[in-house]
Image (cartoon, rainbow, N blue to C red):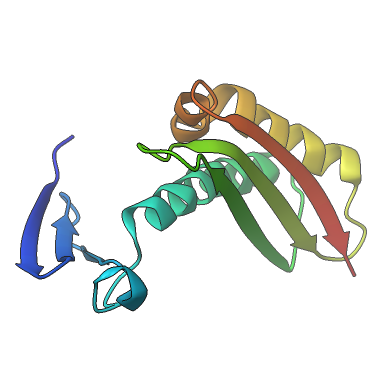
Length: 137
């Protein structure tokens, strides 16, 4: 796997992988950027949700579990001193649908977080990674 990241202007960078989709990264305006993209640390949190989310959807499809909506929120707490690594990261997996069985959702999330999601498994070695599940009508 190979990606390239090019400097655009100031703190604005664009990354591109083999998909040729451009991802904009920038610092917030208060941190000297122009706000034209997500920060690299925000993208890191997004990758955990995206990686595990793809696993969960695949696992639930194999279990014949149907849902109407699925979202994940991720909150990370960083160290106050540089290099300001993430100390704690919490994911909340939110599902909407009729007749959802919590045990099936828990099993899918557990398999992703403990076995399949390479991002979560890598991050778990550096930060306290926790998750919970919410079922909504």
